[in-house]
Length: 85
Image (cartoon, rainbow, N blue to C red; front, top):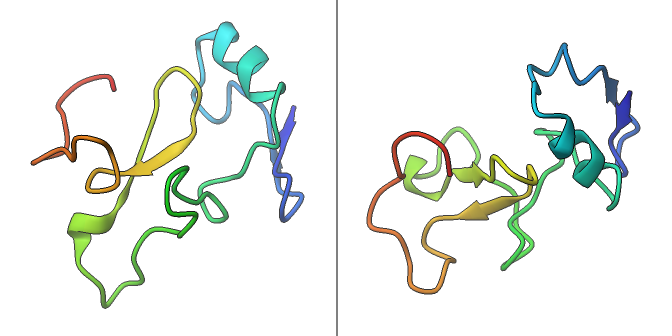
């Protein structure tokens, strides 16, 4: 079971469709945030509200589940990459 550091929401890794147990181990090693609470690791802001640009959506790392805005990366990404990131 993993629990959000901020809101306390919990879930089973299999219910979250995490089939990589090394991801579960990494997530348990830091204050993990659920999708509702997750913020960009660079600017510490959440994804956009419904009325904001979708270009600022958070991308989630497949290896650690942390989030980044593509424009906050150095260098910024022109587009969301396909496949695993």
